[in-house]
Image 1 (cartoon, rainbow, N blue to C red):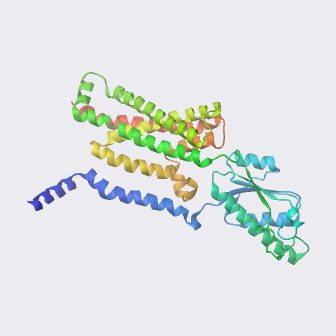
Image 2: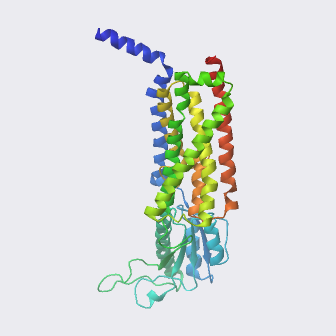
Image 3: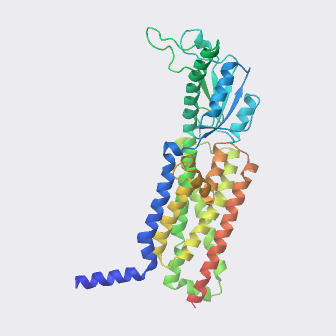
Length: 392
């Protein structure tokens, strides 16, 4: 008898192609996505830091340091050549570069005697949303300073190499470097905005996917058939469900950001931030709600919806950067992630809460999210059309 029960169960599993897909194929796909993404954290796959340099005076040390930086593979020297600090600061604020290096006149090694410590500091104007960039550029500057100083000593008078005193080196670094935040006060915390947006959008997708199962419940209970017989119409029914999911999504994301503001100091309650938050949240919730309806239209049972939605949403979250910053991904997956609507939502929230950009600058994200909402909603309506024939 036990053998018979086992055989019948295996036959049922073999006949259910969706169950077989969820059991064997989708886990492999999900693992492949995660393995590909986390391979970007290998040292060889780290994306070079976008950098611009302003060198003043044309002195041998500053010229040599710029040449060293331009040849280092860990830096991506942009073709933009800002003339002064203000221009470099604007380049970083626009997000075109992650770090701007300003080399002042008289720069050189500040390692050794007390007079050498008065050497002007090299300034790094940085976007701290990528914490790896500051450390990478700072380390490259230190290595470049020593290399340039050694070369200058061979060809003529230049910066002096450090001398060891009785108590060791006078400074821990050979080059004085000052890091300046280009985008806000020192206590500004980009991680709070990132995780509020990333986790908010992630759980938004889970919430609307779960609530969209009401369509499958209504079909199983015969309510959908009665609604269609009452001339409600499938289009009106889907539109009503979609509006409900949009309102639910807006409320859920709002709660997440309000909690981030109250408990973790996110700067939310200003006119610019509130307007930008509303402008991004509404189309994001619309796209997520349409995704939930599409998943419910694709699946035939609530069990299928539960399995498919988890895998699809987690893959979107990984590719779109909801779980960890996209700069840790390989370039191919970063480009692929731009095809997901949630990556555009995260970019929009970053523009609002980190780059402090005004409402017109959010137009690309708003348009793309709105387009995704319409495409997913139309696809859900076309796939749900079979319900009209099955339930008659």
